[in-house]
Amino acid sequence: MITLGIEGTAHTLGAGVVDSEKKVLSNVIDMFRPQEGGLHPREAANHHSDVVASVICRATEEAGITLGDVDLISFSMGPGLGPCLRVAATAARSLSSRLGVPIIGVNHCIAHIEIGNATTGCDDPVLLYASGGNTQVIAYSEGRYRIFGETQDIGIGNMLDKLGRELGLGFYAGPTIEKLAKGGDKLLNLPYSVKGMDVAFSGIMTAALALRKKGHRLEDIAYSVQETAFSMLTEVTERAMAHICKDEVLLGGGVAQNMRLQDMVRIMAEDRGAEMSVPDRKLCVDNGAMIAWLGNIMYGSGVRMDIKDTAIRQRFRTDEVDVVWR
Ligand code: ATP
Ligand code: FE2
Image 1: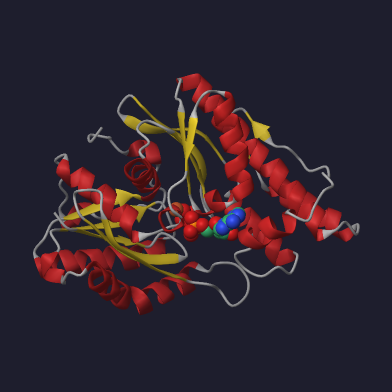
Image 2: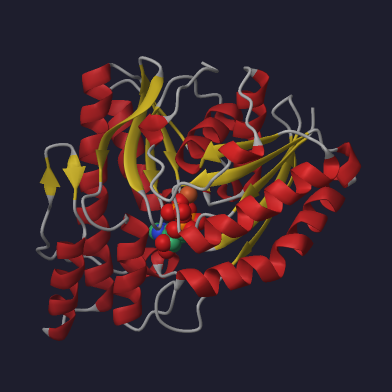
């Protein structure tokens, strides 16, 4: 069975094609990068509508198929920004009706987990999902993927991006902050904000900006931000693993590409006799292949949707989905 998946929760419009054998046949992404300032949902949605048709065409071409070969359309139903979600959903509905093939709307966060399970060989991990808009610690328990901890304010990537913008590092600052951090050696004091199993990041950003005003080096600020924020994430991930007795940890989301975060989580996992996995970069960031893959397994276990069931869900929670395929 060939599934075409369309992703459009935030910055990225993506289309990917998978078969039922876990093979990713193509995975094309086109990311909206604002000229200045943060992400404006309407501008991102305009970008998505400009590129959606060509991204889908490229995805089918690169997969070596035509639209006529597609057996199932899946799309990211939420969580995400309304205007962006609507572009992906509208494209998916029109394709499904035009081609006369079924449609499945999927939860974006669960797609990160399932593509990780499919491509890294993980089976029942705790997922640390660290992206721009989302920061959650998720694991399967009694029929659902449950959220064991999450951010109480902004996603870690958004914090890094906002901080980067204020510090003049340009947009999509995560990779720049990672590079700068390598030149830092002084651990500056920043608020370590773990509340129960939840984390909060906005205090770190404010404090980091104040440190810059006091004249501290950018390298030391970047280093301290990473050490503090990533330790918080590692701590709640470890506690989730201990609490529900899981010996696998999976990273997902754009921030999971950060080598320092990977090192911290790997060391924590090894200390517990557990294993860490990270999917390929192109499958870690928001992408259509993961949406296709989740659609494929949901359909395979009997999930069916009518067009009328495919309304977008901006606040679609990970734990609202009955995980019938496990
Ligand atoms: P979501 O809808 O899942 O929240 P998104 O569009 O915000 O997704 P992703 O594509 O998963 O996010 O990831 C983008 C984020 O990852 C950005 O905030 C970016 O700064 C961050 N990022 C990318 N590479 C790195 C890195 N090496 N270190 C830290 N952060 C990174
Ligand atoms: Fe994501």
